[in-house]
Image (cartoon, rainbow, N blue to C red; front, side):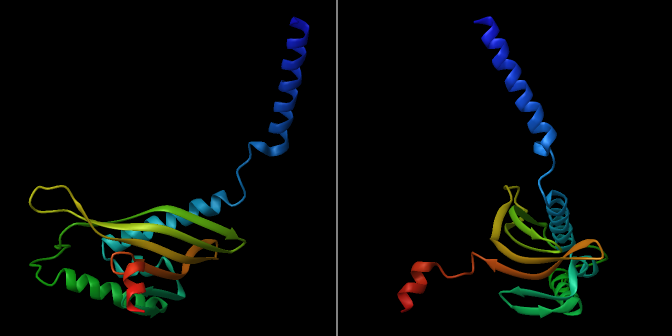
Amino acid sequence: MTVARSLIAGVLGIVMLAAGASGASAKPAGAEDRAAIADLMSRYMFALDSTDPEAYAATFTDDAELTTGGGTEHGTTEIMKMVQGLKDRLNKDATGPGRHFIALRHIYFNLAVDVDGDTAKGEAYWQTIRRQDNGQPPIIISMGRYEDEFVRKNGHWLIAKRNIINDMMTPKPEAAAKKD
C-alpha cells in the first residue's frame, strides 16, 4: 500500500510540474490590456469628479463619440465644452476659487472587457453618490451602465465611443409596454 501511494503521489507531482512548465501559471492573454483599460476608467472618473475638462477629454480619442441622455458629443473639443458647462453650472453660486458644489463621487464596477488586438469592447456599471449636508450617509443619486469601444493609440488605451445609459432615467420595460 505504501509503495502504491508513493507512486501515485509521484505521478501527481510530475503532472503538476508539467502543467506549470507548460504555462498554466502564465498571465491570461490581455491581462495587461485589461489592467490598462481599468486604469483609464479610473482616470475618467477622477477627471469627472474634479470637473477637469482637459483631463476628462484626455481619456478619449480625438474623434470620439460620447452619447448621454442629452445627446452626442463628437470629438474632444465638444467633450471639453460639455464638461466645462457642467463645471460652470455646478459652481454658479460659488464665491472664491476652487470647487464649491456638493461632493459627488462617480464609481464604476463590474467592468467586462473583450480585447481584440488594438481594439476592445466593454461594459461597466456606474453609480453617482452624493454627500448629504445633514450628517446622514451618502445617497445614490443616479446609476446606470457604460457601453464602450476602446482603441489603443500610441501605446495607450483611450475611449473611442461611450454610450452612457442612466437606468434611473430610462423608462421601465413595463411602462414602455403600456404605451403600445
